[in-house]
Length: 146
Picture 1 (cartoon, one colour):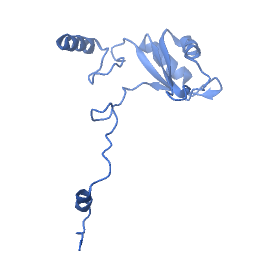
Picture 2 (tube, one colour):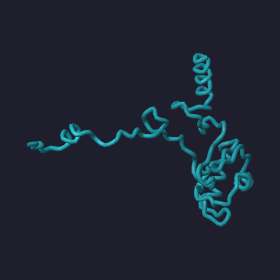
Picture 3 (cartoon, rainbow, N blue to C red):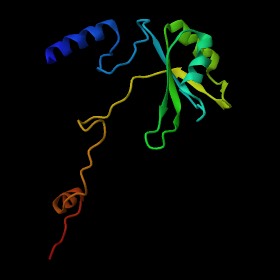
Picture 4 (cartoon, rainbow, N blue to C red):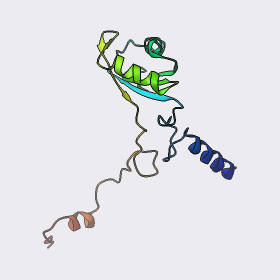
């Protein structure tokens, strides 16, 4: 099963659906689709409203607003995926710095999601305070214990 997943992953990388780091990121160079980052969104902007606004520039494949897990409110940014690079470029020039639902929005090409090192799900590992021997080694002066 793992071998089949590796073969499938290689194929998806070769056609540009997955980038070299292995994350699902639509490759804009191959012309498959282009994802734009949209920042400064109003908390009242919906995914449907975002899609309708950007569809003036071309075929919108997906519009996504990032939500806070705790409060279930918009974080004020989202992503719009276009079917072609030309449509995305047109939307970038037309919407960047313009108002949408009373807020000035900022549009740019989306970048690959950054992951942090370590195997703990992308978060740094909490190690706790140093022990007595480690604290002494960290200081440059020797300790006088009598």
